[in-house]
Image (cartoon, rainbow, N blue to C red):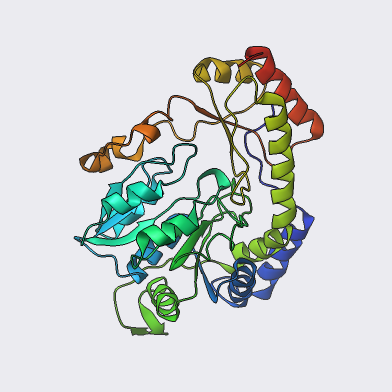
Length: 352
């Protein structure tokens, strides 16, 4: 079976975990601090603050930006649930707007139309590894803070790396991401106040040990996870280039039989997502050939029961759940694997 995703954990990561286990410092300590410094330098931001996962990174970034009950946060309806559930966790209302005509990211014009006096932030999602049009979004948002959901865009770069374009950026290190810590997250920012708020909120609201200034959370990363992350960060650029190379092979071979994605705005291909009117039949065909695939995502966020009250008119996004299919693109694929996927897709759909 060719898997849709495959975390690459090697001897170096295992040695670093063993080293940390032997050190006796397992909770958020020197390894986390080193990972934060290295990740901030990589993204080109002043601060990076590690958390337990991408969802908690989003939650803390929203709270640090001052998002509270009664506020509105503009975002996409086509993403993983956490992009919207984190807004609800902060007590705010997600305002869903439509996507670009030719892609999977927010339409800046739709964002402008949705801004009201209650808008506290805009959360663009760099879906599948492609940056949103951040120049247009910054102009559209004017003084409204931008919190980047960069959980699928580690290392994507266009006018600056993912996580460096707004007030804050948020990352996930789940095993299927472009780099992993097993589980983990990160908030990046140039804002000292946001960094201080995130640091305090992730540690039970403490300014220092046993000085609790507000109610907070236990959202701290372990040194074990950070040790894995430090090794993975050194490998990230190579992993991303392998993803791009696989994506280019797919696009060159499949553009005449399915709708292929465009490589633009720093795309790092967390997913290589095609579109087909016969998506379900194609997926069955790939499964029969021993090829994994994924549907990201089978429904819009406001179709989920906890978010149904926030339903919106988003026709471009609404056309996607029945058509999208992600093919294996991860750096663990061999050249033969990529060729096998290409042959299988072409055998199913030989012409456009």
